[in-house]
Length: 281
Ligand code: NDP
Image 1: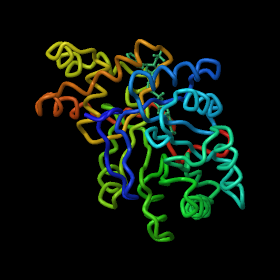
Image 2: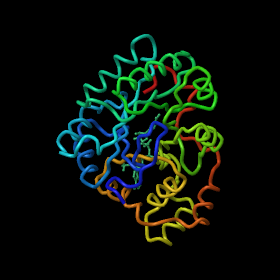
Image 3: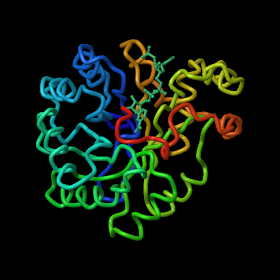
Image 4: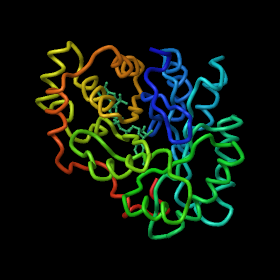
């Protein structure tokens, strides 16, 4: 197993570590320390966004780590009020400046914001950023089938990823299948359901945890890896950074995986993408 755990191939020819850390709601003052700790543990993938307000601190931790840049996979995202005109390019340059990097590995449109209807324009701007080598891969987040289909009609670039809400109670099977059929990898945001429903108390998860001598969180995250999803659980606690990373050396049986998959029940915990406008952080 290479440092950073298993990797999956993106449609751009680049590889992404399947396990990373999320940085939404990590307080700015804790971000540099937590990212440094994560890199020390062996994480090599950081999921960020302009709207999380902590890109500068992520960049500082990367710079101080001494780890070669090409060994760390960094994602950031274009916020909703910057789809128009030259704004995507300006927003990207601001993110890159805050991160202190020469390129990012993955740049995403954070939400489609269909009420503004500018995501196709923004996508073309991301293609230009990709063509300049400033983002190695480009992708989308919170895009539904209808948004992906529109991009397919109006662009030659298939998004490298679609980063969507996905956890045992909300699996979006049709969207996952349709995206993958076109070559788009799935990133599962809120892989632990953000603590908003008792994913860690679900019976098949608790049972598998006991069987493998692991925690329910480790089982839920392991299930995600075995389903082929890219994940970046968020924790503000160093001991949980270790716990969430220690999922690479055990395997759920086919029956255990199937029992967790059977928990799917339309249990969305975040926002429906079509209800998110320009100003919801
Ligand atoms: P997660 O599903 O990762 O859940 C985070 C919650 O789980 C926190 O309350 C955390 O608490 C807790 N937790 C973490 N590890 C454990 C553990 N081992 N045992 C028990 N509880 C645990 O939710 P997020 O919404 O943060 O999603 C992860 C990442 O996905 C984000 O940080 C962000 O990078 C991305 N994301 C993207 C979105 C998008 O629109 N593209 C939307 C939402 C998220 P504590 O911190 O106290 O440990």
